Image (cartoon, rainbow, N blue to C red; front, side, top):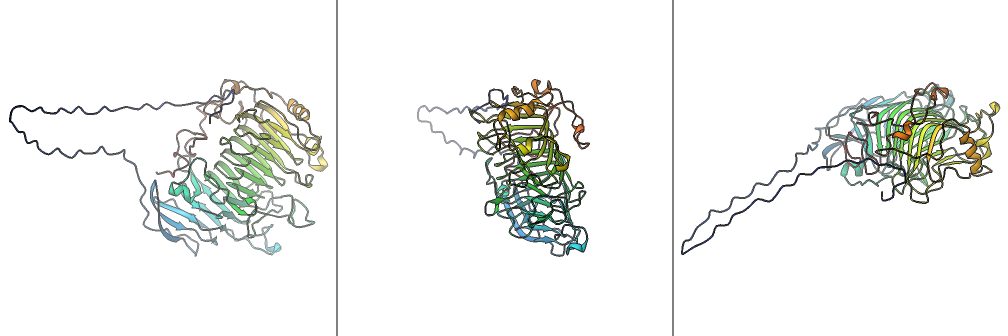
Length: 525
């Protein structure tokens, strides 16, 4: 990035290179009539390159419980070696485990369903029965896809994708395997979708009551039914932990494309932690309705919004790093939409604590809150590092979003900002439908320890410096018991607070220290 914001302090490292001088060669002289027959010069022995461990293909595909099994498609080669390719069935009809096996990759050859849709209730009263399929993916396993392929976890079924800090589970693209990607590649396959039975709004059925079993929605862009929604608040779609999702966002149909991670109506029983979205051509993550509770979320290089929340979702997020690529992306936060359905319930209520947002593309705003949503953004740092004249930090649209609390409408009142610092050349901008920049400034000013003229001292892009750590923190447990009590703002308190290391990947956009290497390459264990 050639432009640096006035207060962005980037850390750097120095690589020391040792040089080698050429050998001295002495040539013999000649005198009189003496002839010297020199022996042939020996062929020089080349200096071997540094040893690189290359992958060799597994002998075959493992047996899984599903009757369709895995299809052995031979091998595929890339810069990290040669792999056995095992194609997944189009639908898992029984619980199965994808084992981590050295030299083996799993491929999605189109849409892959986990179980069949069990409908909006857990019994057959809605005409469907649960298949109760759980897809387990072992730590270190790699799944790749291309084109319109995506993973759909249907209602009444689960995913159990639990990696580790040293061996994350990776969902990526075919081009990533082949070594064809650069730091700006994106949109090469669909993404991961979890559907659940928790309440949603904006029903597809005319006349359906929001938040009930009659209110369902269709996954954006899916050509075949991929439904979510119901009335089961504690629904469980499984767990995602220590997972990378790279190069997603293929356009499935029309102008609709998936994100790295899409949730629809997931319930409180679903677990999310340590998730990295890398170079999604759409949003980094998008949460439609239901409940989402996530800690340790990283979004790098999303080409639309980093965090998009909609249709009545109840979301809590803590320890969030979101960083745009230079010249790419829209907002860091887009909350709900203005579509005439703003007062449907459950009303969206998204609460974020300990986030660091690095915005790098000139645009209309860094954060956009609208649609009558309830929203809380606390203990967080927003830095606009886009080219001059810069991008305004906060925008709020519609008086429905700024009006006073109303229990009858499940409305908690205007957005909540506490211990939020803004480093933008313009802190506030006017929204639509009567919300002025002064209105947004007044709402911001009503919170404690907010600063709209903050000077960032972040290092290594996202690690707190002196100024960040001087800000008094807000106890987010006042919002929800989900949150940890903290004494600092931002996602990363200091260099010792290295929760992002190990399970992530590095790029020109952001480096996360010691981990499995570049996002353009597969890890070799």
